Image 1: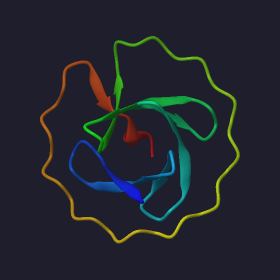
Image 2: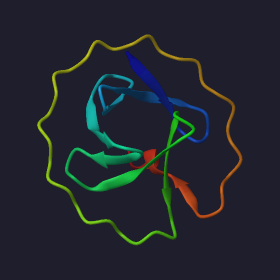
Image 3: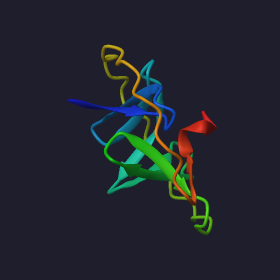
Image 4: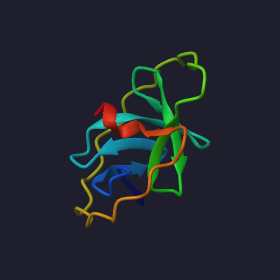
Length: 100
């Protein structure tokens, strides 16, 4: 089972499957640890917000890198999701998915 992920502007981005983040073409991008999202190279990406977004606090100190994890098998690409309405900006946050 996968959970869809959107950019803060409402655009469908990809999905989370088995604790791992993939883009909409099923390319592996990183993993989830609790509510934190880490890029596949071990750099901190952001935190899960409302189970659909990945945001990064601009006021937060840079996090230490973590050890990389093994690249998982590529999952089946789920059906494309419709875009959502854009969300109002949040103070001290940026859309972490803008890195991709």
